[in-house]
Amino acid sequence: MKLGPKEILYMKALDEIAGVPAKDCLIKGNQIIFLIDESFMGKAIGRKGALVKILSDKLGKQVELVAYDKKPDQFVKKMLKDLQVNSAEVAVVEGKKSLFVSMSFESKRKLLNNASKLKKVRELLQRDYGIDSIRLK
Image (cartoon, rainbow, N blue to C red; front, side, top):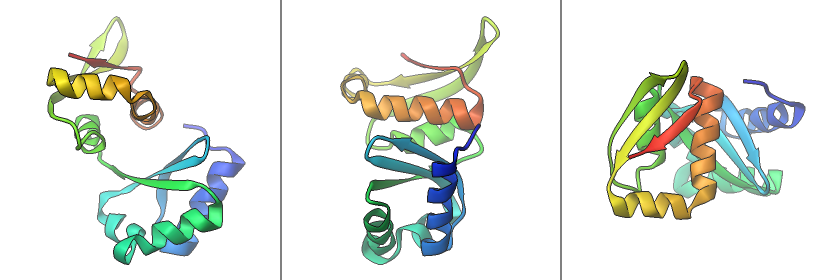
């Protein structure tokens, strides 16, 4: 994972405002996604989302907080919590790490229609877990 000066600046802002260190920072257009330890989620959000709002106002971008998990399968389940994920497992196919995600047809359709969410999941998996691809089944 390579962090640029903008990512480092945003991560420092999160730490100063919320007192929470970020594991990663992903910038997507007008959105910043912070990957933080699950134990810090409440502190990072603040009462009624106050800290997220302050951070969003100061940075001039929409802020999303994502809970980190040591296991990529658990991370994906948390990231896609609004969808029905039956299972997720890592496998090596042709020398590359892939994450196979089993979900209902309706959930798969919703995810494929929300390309930005799928891209975020894919990029975070690649950056933080070394997973080359995500395959839906």
